[in-house]
Structures are given as structure tokens and as C-alpha cells.
Length: 146
Ligand code: HEC
Image 1 (cartoon, rainbow, N blue to C red):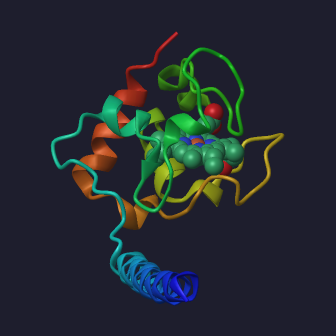
Image 2 (tube, helix red, strand yellow):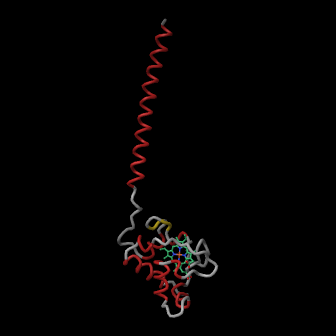
């Protein structure tokens, strides 16, 4: 008799605990879904320098420059941008180094460097970055001279 009572007491307790756990899990799921929907793109600090922008792992909603481009001659997914400040001058006839670098950021497929696939560099920077941020990046890359 004593045993039976204990059993029913403890199983009642268990049901309450299980129910409480379910509520916590459900609340967690609902919260998670809500967060996902509202999650804004990671913020780009408005006063970031060109170098800081270049090195951000995520820029807007996509990978940042430094995840694909090194500055020391190593090829990642994209070509190294070592010396790009001087190299850019000779890429497209009639286009200055500065214009070429700016176009490379805003319209990556306008000129696809030999040996690379079009569409590899994200085309979203024109939307993700404001004019000042694009210019900060152009200035930073123009300073990478050999
Ligand atoms: C997912 C990889 C990836 C990311 C991220 C990326 N790029 Fe690129 N980028 C490439 C590839 C691949 C090329 C070569 C193909 C082409 O010309 O579009 C390239 C080309 C370039 C070039 C021309 C290089 C040359 O030697 O002619 C510049 C300049 C450049 N990227 C700058 C940037 C900057 C600045 C960012 C960040 C705002 C960035 N890239 C982000 C992959 C990437």
C-alpha cells in the first residue's frame, strides 16, 4: 500500500516535470523562430576603416573580402590582392586602377579575372555597402602597392 502510494505520487511528479520541460522546449522553439525571422544582417560599424571592412568575416549578408582575398600573395577562393593598387592599372585598357577596383567591388562580373569563375565573388556589395564604405575599401586597396 505504502509502495503504491509512493509510486503514484512520483509518477504524478514526473508528469508535471515532463510537462514543464515541454513548455520550456516549445517556448525555446517559438523564441528561436521569432529571432530567426527578425535577425538583421550583422551591423557594419558606420565608422569602420577600409582595412576593418576588408577584414570583416561577414559583410552585409555574405562573406567578407578577407575570407577570399589575402594581401600576401596567397590564393584563397579569390586571387590575392597583394599589389592590387598598382596591378589594377593594367587590367582593363582605359580604366584607372581606382575605377577598376571600384567596379570589381560593385560589379564583380563586369571583368572576370582569367582562371576564375564568374559569380564566385558575391554581387551584393553594391547594396550592402554605402558610398563611403565602398570608397574606404577602394582607398585601402589602392594603398596595396608593390
Ligand atoms: C566568395 C569569395 C570572394 C569574396 C567574399 C570577395 N571576392 Fe573579390 N574576387 C573573388 C574572385 C573569385 C575574383 C576573381 C574573379 C573576378 O574578377 O570577379 C575576385 C576579384 C576581385 C578583385 C579584382 C582582382 C584582380 O586582380 O583583378 C578585387 C579588387 C576584389 N575582388 C575585391 C574584393 C573586395 C574589396 C571584397 C569585399 C568587399 C571582395 N573582393 C570579396 C572572390 C571574392
